[in-house]
Length: 104
Image (cartoon, rainbow, N blue to C red; front, side, top):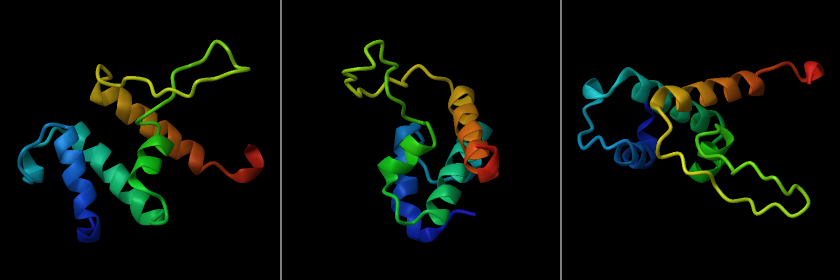
C-alpha cells in the first residue's frame, strides 16, 4: 500500500515513468513493482532522501570507471534500461540488503 505521506514521491515517480494519471490500475506491472519497492524502502528508511533511495536501490548507478585511482563518479544514463532490468537491479539490491550480516 502506498503511504499518503509519501505522495509527493509517488508524484515524482509517476512523472518519471510518463504516467499522467494517478490511476494505479493503468500502470504496467513492472511500474507497480518498482513503485512499491521504492515506497516500502522509503517507509523502512525515512531518514533517507529520495535521491539516496533511488541510488541505494541501484535505479541510478555510477559509470564503471577504468581509472580507479581518479574516479569521476558520473551517473550512468539509464534512459535505455528496460523496466525489467531496473526491477532486476532493485530486487538484487534488496536481497543483498537482507542477507545475514555474517555471510558478508
